[in-house]
Image (cartoon, rainbow, N blue to C red; front, side, top):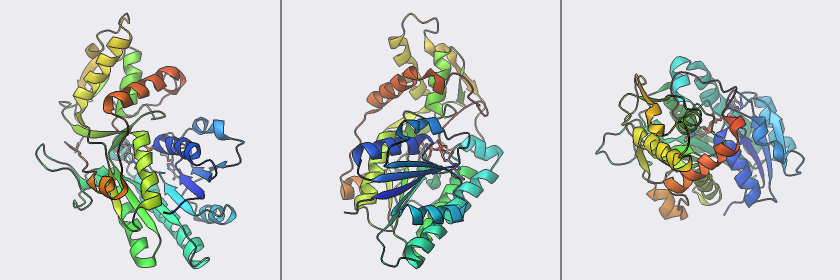
Length: 352
Ligand code: NAD
C-alpha cells in the first residue's frame, strides 16, 4: 500500500476537486494538501476558505501550464503525489470554444508530467511518488441501448472536443509511464453529481431553475442515458486506486446507475413536489422545456466497474435516491451558490 503524504491537487477549487480536498483531509488529517487552481469561472476559492489557516492546507492561485511554478511547488513542498483534476470540463463550452480545452486538458496535463519527471525522476531517482490522472468515461464514445458497458479495454472513440482532449491527456499519461517510468494511475469515471457542482451542469442547473420556477431545458427527446455517481463515491475510488492500484493501470469508476436525462429530471421534480407541496411551482414537471439537441450528442454512457470492485474492493456507498436527496439538501442550504451571478452558457447544462 502506498500512502500519499504531501499532495498537490490541481483543480481543487472546482466541483470534484473541492469534494476531494474535504474528503481527503477529513480521512487523513496527518497528510498535507497544496491546491493549485487557476480559478476559472468553474473554480471557487470560497469552497476551500474554511481550510485556510490549517497547517495541512495551502491554496496556490496558478495555472498548471506554468511548469516552473509546478516544479517549484513539487520541490518546496516535497510533494510525493499529484492528483490531477484541473480541466475545462463542460462539453457545451468545448463545442463553442475548443481552444481552452486543448490548452488546459492536453498541454496542461503535459506540463504537469514534465514537471513531475524532472523533479521526481531526474532530480531524485528512487523517490516514491504517484501521479493520479482523473479522466472521464466520455473518452470511449457512445453506446447503443444494447451495447455492453464500457470496460478499461473499450477502444477510445471520443466524440466532442472535450472528450478528445481528455482522451489525448490519458494517452500522454500512459506514455510517461511506459517511456519514463513515472508512477501513474488513471481513472475514467461516469457523470458525477453532488455538492459544489457549478450550476451549468444538468443536476444543479435543474435544481436551481426548479426552485426559482424557471424553465428546465431538456436536450432533444431527453432519452440520453448517463451513469450517475455521487461525487464522494468517485473520490473514494480515486483514494483506493492511489493507495492500492497497479501502476500504469486505468480503472473505470461507476455506480451502476443508468438514468435517462428526462427520467432523472422527473425524479427531481417529484422530490421537490414532495418537499414543497405548497410551492406555487408544483407540479415541478410543468417547467420542463424541450430544446434542440446538442450537436454530436452521445446517446448512452455506461460503466462496467467490475475491475475496481474486484481488484480494490470498491463499493459505492450512495444510492441515487440517497445521493440526490443529499445533493438537494446541500443546494437548499446554500442559495448563494446558485441564485445570483451564475453565468450560464448556452441553454442547457450537462456534465463533463
Ligand atoms: P470543474 O470544471 O468543476 O473544475 C475544474 C477546476 O479546474 C476549476 O476549479 C478550474 O478553476 C480549474 N482549472 C481549469 N483550468 C485550469 C488551469 N489551466 N490551471 C489550473 N486550474 C485550472 O470540473 P469537475 O467537474 O470538478 O471535473 C474535475 C475533473 O474530473 C476533470 O478532469 C474532469 O474531466 C473529470 N471528470 C469529471 C466528471 C464530472 O461528472 N464532472 C466525470 C468524470 C471525470
